[in-house]
Amino acid sequence: MGASASKIKFRESLTSLISRDVSPDDAEFWDELWKIPSSADEVFELLTPDNARRLRDERFDNLATLFTQATAQLCQIVETPYTIYFDQALNCVRVLTRVLPFLLEKGDLGDGDPNVEALCWSDHVDGSVTTASKKSRRNDDDDDEEDDSQEPLALLVVHAAMHMLFLPQFTCEFYEEDEDENDSDDDDDSDVSFDEEDDIDEDDLMDKKRAAKVDKEAQAEAGLGKPRRTRKGVRLIPHPAGIVWAPGVGFTNDGKCSIGNESSKYRRPRNNKSKTVHNPEAAYTRKYDKNRIEVLRLLLATCSDPLFSPADEYNPLASRWMSVAVAADAPNAPCLFYSLLNTVISYDPSNSSFGGVPYSSTLASDSHVKLVDLSAQVLCVLLDCGLPGDPLPVENQYGEPVVAISEAQKGGFNIFRALLARISDGKDLNTLYRGFVRLLRHTFESKNTLLPSSQSKLECYQEILILLWKTL
Figure 1 (cartoon, rainbow, N blue to C red):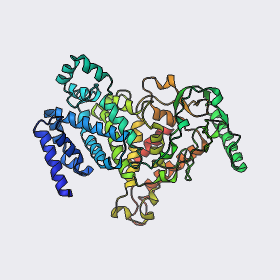
Figure 2 (figure 1 turned 180 degrees about the vertical axis):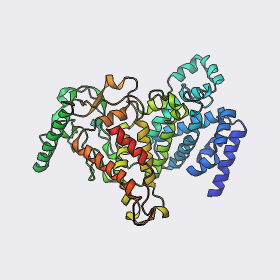
Figure 3 (figure 1 turned 180 degrees about the horizontal axis):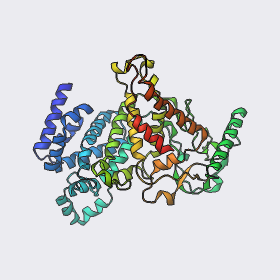
Figure 4 (figure 1 turned 135 degrees about the vertical axis):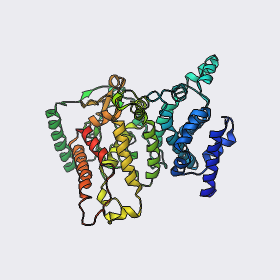
């Protein structure tokens, strides 16, 4: 199907959704809709704001089916990530990104529509979730039992997006998980081992000891003191480390991860495997940037409901969507935090396009620049919700940074704020400092070149300032 033909077919399908009721059981219609090749620009062009609101206000059951089926397909692609379905998954991502803001416009922070509430937050198994249909299902005990086992669509779409940001061959390379990494933190003390057999260069070992001593002195001066031990907690280490997108805080250019137990004498046993967690160079590839951008836009759309409440009534604890995204059980949260942060601070605007050739940004767009902008925006949003993170270090029996279960279960807990608050290593702080200086300096240098406008402007400098403020 050619580009013009697919665009016409997609327009016809949208027209049908707006003009008539389409049954959730019309498999031919829905299957064809998801398989129509389309770009993000086409989806946003054809599904105009007026059409989206008409679909919501006049054909809500159609919108409910659209939303439910798109979310179900994303959950399916997470469970079975076959490459032949990636294009179809992207169509679902684009449609959800487009319609979600118009649902949230009628959400609990907006005008408050009971149908939107039922669709997003009620337990359900089909696409017809209007208030009337929900009441009819409540009269059926069998349906109640079936509904109780279902999670709200709001939670499913947020979790699916966070999973898809680290989907092999879609947004990252293949990776292997060590089985022992999934061990619970309440193992016996006999599982704790020492690193006496590590084959480490003596000079490197001395450098690490000196750096660890300096860090301990600085932390003691800041009042952080000795880490508190706990047997169970929410781990703050990216796992697997090989899927983090860029080097920077906790990750070196040669692919080594130094977060957590790198400076501890305790180690989680690894069944005679390498005791140093490596991030393969392939993980730093930029070939998945376009897909990462698409999914990050969806995640940003799910967290946009505070925009529909008055500014003077903003409450950082009010958004249920954001609470799901920053909860302790949010999928891949440590990986996402370090990926977003490192994507931003490792970016060098002066060498972003064609080796720094003047005016290159006007000749071709750089998808990585868009990823940097979007990463800064998403990270600002995720850090703007919930309670501040506790900087006091807490470790499990393996010397890995964790958040105590009692802390993680508190209302308003934000795992991204906890991760930011725990950055205390001197090397990581220097990396943050150099990254912020480089990015903010470019904002002024790009305006004072011999060739006017020869360097691309950093569009996300305001977000960089916000991130700098949040790290202080």
